[in-house]
Amino acid sequence: MAEPVTDLDRAAGSTPPPADGPPPPGPRTVGPWLVGGAVTAVLLLLAGRYGYHRDELYFLLCGRHLDWGYVDQGPLVPALARLLDTIAPGNLVVLRTPSALIAGAAVVLVAATAREFGAGRGGQLFAAFLGGVAGIVLAPGHLLSTTTVDLLVWLLAAWCAVRMLRTGDSRWALGVGLVLGVGMLNKLLPALLAVGLLAGLAIAGPRRLLRDRWVLAAAAVAVLLAAPNLVWQAAHGFPQLSVASSIAEGDSSYSGRLDAVVLQLLIISPYAVPIWIAGLVTLLRRPAWRPYRALGWAWLVVFGIVLLAGGKGYYDAPLLLVLTAAGAVVTAEWAGRGARRGRRALLAAGGVVATAASAVLLLPTLPADRLPGLVVDVNYDSGETIGWPAFADSLAAVHRGLPPEQRQRAVILTGNYGEAGALARYGPARDLPPTYSGHNSMTGFGRPPQDADVVIAVGWARPDQLRGWFVEVTEAGRVDQRVDVDNDENGMPIFVCRGLRRPWSQLWDTDVRHAS
Image (cartoon, rainbow, N blue to C red; front, top):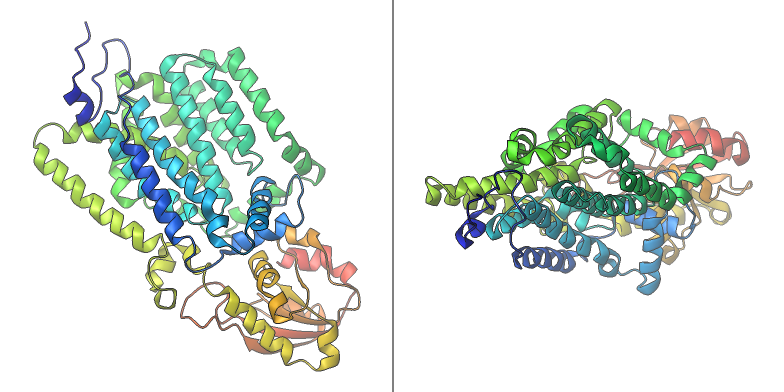
């Protein structure tokens, strides 16, 4: 007969497992909801700090050209960006409110997953805390981002999978399929989670689920919901594969195999590393947790694919949060036995350090004009939210310096979508000419008119490429963002180019597109 469950057992960490299976879910508790609400509140309070991120500026541009797909993403976030900017034009707090809400929901989902694993009230609260200080929750939670939506999709799908594995009710697979299908309207990455989960079932079981009618129905639902984006990708030659290839070659932030390995130690929190490792070991080794073993293998498979393919190191991070939820259960058990006072003091001290580090490194808490280089080194995205109005001012100064007859027919050519998005946002107030870029989906948003033979070019570190397109290339200034921040634009040269060597119709889809 199973040992009776006491309130002390539940509060300390996890429910003792019955003799013939994994522990039942822990008690419902309000603690994780309070932590999730606090995370959302903090993110909303800080949402207006600094400025737009380059990706947000790009989403706003994509939102002006709504479609069922883009070179590097699905339609979901651009459509959301357009809606939010229509409701409150130029309002960063409104633009970022969905992300703040998603971050809070992610915290609750981490705790809910821990509850499915048997966590008591204390274990669930600890899991919520770990989610609340996690880099993959806080950093994307501050920005409107495809990563933020992806985080919610993976965590919700994983929670449904845990429910299915615990209860043996394969109808939960429909929840997985529904979430993944909607998620693939954001990015195609949820397909990677599906591969990981199926591989985990094939390796660790229960293999009967691989031929279960509900699982097959879930796959059909996912494909049906993702069909608009998949059809668009197919019709355009699956451009996301080209973007993935560029990422694998290191042409992006957070890419590279070594960076991917290092990021596993940072993306949740260094404090959480021994905890999620304990969770992985528990999922793979603890006999009573055998029904969940596929989840441990799912992370191993997904991370292995990311390494082999050279993907970004944060792709698998939501599954790391699932491992963290499992680790929170066993860590709460560990803290509830032996030298309990010392163990709990150790966890509390580490938690204080983790909270302080996350607040400084992941959130815009420090003044933008005195942002230490360490913050940008750790959190690249923080530097990309600073200085865009001053960036536009730098271009305006060069534009005003042109002779009047050249100023009338000038256009701006940027090296990336963030620069183009910034000028679309801030350029009209500065009387800047139209801006074009060959970067990602920007190529399809229009090219310069044929008579545009005076070009202000920014975002090109080397003028060699420009000299292949124009007869005359002269450095006319430098980007001055008026803060000492080491981001991609600060101090970059601004060129004035005259005299096209070939028509734009010949340059655009070949040279400019591949150079951006």
